[in-house]
Length: 438
Ligand SMILES: *Cc1c(COP(=O)(O)O)cnc(C)c1O
Image (cartoon, rainbow, N blue to C red; front, top):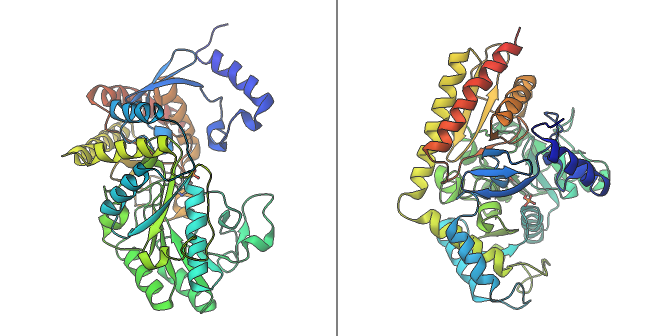
């Protein structure tokens, strides 16, 4: 028998013998929608090709980094020319300063920064700086926001967790999550309650200013401003985790879009142009706490790696070129309008939430169309509808992130042809969803 995904299935079986779940990051295993992941051999522009020779218009974008699409010529060339000079030195290189200066120019809160290797490292390190600078231990995060996989960040609200966090993962000792307090996104009262109950003990409040890790949930008017005010009043370090939203919602991040300036910012994804990277930074005085200038230790053998830095510079440079970012966002807006129309035509209840070049198409139950503002709204979505849509799209050559809790990423390579292909698939996929609803 020769099926559409035969080679991917064989590859997955082989991989599963040596890699847990056959993958190196859990979401890739498609657990929430079922089925076997396809194994990719190459990507070019908006298109990826799998081991069976199937092609897909790609909205995964490596989960965010590939804002210029796959194998962009300028990024390719930058990596190649860095590669010709060597892969790692363990000494400073000039390109690290070039990338840092570019980030400082673009992101208002970042006067100085440190480059690391992943978003996870960036958030861990930023929180260490906040704790070192304040001498306090506690931390406020929001239910449904993801900040990487550090022990004390793998916490979301279970019942009663609005006061003390409970670990979300096996292997996290209760003690390491005990200083993590969980509030509800877009709910300033929940923040007030935590600040009051823990007066003088909260070092940092960390937030995705535009969450993308529970699907795209824009901040309601006044929410980010309210966080800024409360952090100032209580001496709490405000950390924006812009690992996803940075260079996605605005060329200067969510802080530029909403004009709310945090004390520290975490970056990743786009600033590595598809290679491993992260960064954290903020007010010069706060960053002065980082070793070797200050007492907050943080290090990395491959930090500021020449290939990652070269790819990041080329990506940001291209994104900053005249009109590129605006065109990217306009393309995403147009796509969302078309998807919304097609869903309507098929009689499928959806709400599409988009900020800049990232969006989520939420399948709604009971014909609900109001905006989703926090995790519990997302949990009330039609997950079966999403799974049907995901597979119908994939079988028709469109690759989506495999969960209702993820964001779709549009790139500058998504041209008219890619959008047309997407819409042909979506029209049929919405009909398939409608047919399942009886
Ligand atoms: C992806 C992501 C991270 C983690 O970054 P990694 O590079 O996967 O460690 C942290 N925060 C946010 C908001 C992210 O989207």
